[in-house]
Length: 275
Length: 275
Image 1 (cartoon, rainbow over the protein chains, first blue to last red):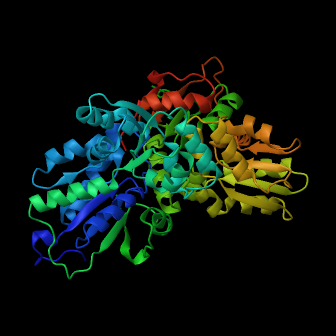
Image 2: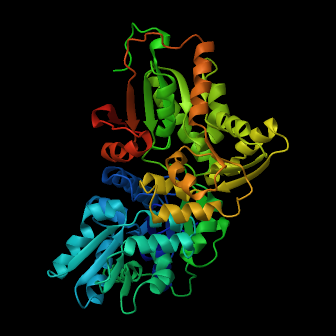
Image 3: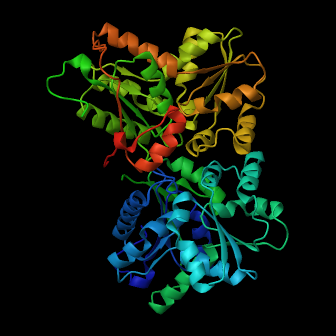
């Protein structure tokens, strides 16, 4: 139980959802930046991946995910999935004007703008995120002269979900997607699955190219929003807890989730829910 | 409209469903073997892939797919997906004792048993199909001394759905999954997505290894069932027609579907349905 009726609002958990397990890379940053908060993470593992589905379908799924989390009582919502942010963020913000709702694209775009010197930025994301054009638009708003190479790398999602992050297939696939990107100075990982490839990317890319993801930037943005709304949890004696809801196999989430979270997961903290 | 009330039963269409587009390789064989039949193909593109989901979830989805097709009036049902066959075939057969319901696993297993001389067979399939053990069981029933190497190759589904069937990533991935299979004489493609890799497989594998899939064998088995039930369509003047139902983007199905069907698809024949 993350909630009891005597809690005040700042003690409520923060809801986080993703198409599956990629969002756990965001949760990891959130936990680090907000050590006194509790989190409910919802992974729509029965219907992943979102990145090759149409924006209409992703929007519908995102609304369902948000509804499930709101019913569990949360004080803020993080869409830890680029595809769902692109398809549903503005709609969810309109639906819930009193709830801080945050996506990962705007923080990621800001991080890329901060990191680049030459203004030449590559965005690696899923097909649907790239087609949604939100990264390209937000980067250009902040850096009108930016030269952006947007690249759909949907296969990296399947590789990450298979736990193949440093084998021969991962290497060939990364090299394939990175072709002809030699003149950029910043690579933005525009999908929450992609941070697991950072070690291999660092090995493959020439020195001096910045690899940026939105996890840390999203955590800072959330911290700011909670502070502004006066709903940061101040009970510092409490243990930061995380609870997980999944729409498919608990054991698979536990096994593969550890890759993304980079720590052990207990099946006792994972609940299978019906859609 | 594939149905009007003056039709007799033999004129009704044959329902075919799959998690997405892989089943189109089966449809292709069905159309060839049964040139006077009409087909309704349902691809659950909003929720693909099935191969990494739990058997319970796949079973639920398969029942929903079957229901949608039965409501459109069909005379027979083909589960053109190995994962769904493994999870739901026997249940669907029990639910509809008067309808011929056919999966792809039993025909595929028989084809492999016919093709092998040494009895050493490799089964390449998705994680859930391999875990379901149905191929292994059916092959061993017919060939008790068979030596089966079962290999989960889930990544091939994503590659096929991306249309990457003969590039550097496809080659590295196939070589990865084929490691240490040098002593088999037969490779059974136990996923309806995998036949698109046949040209590349032929190039990679040593000569003399038979590559077997279940599409043609399933078509022959269906022909036999329809003849036994006296519901083969005899109106030979009619044009064989196919109609497609999808749960996500019509244009993506049209574009990627052509790879599996190996012929052009018109969006006019593809209908988006709500789940």
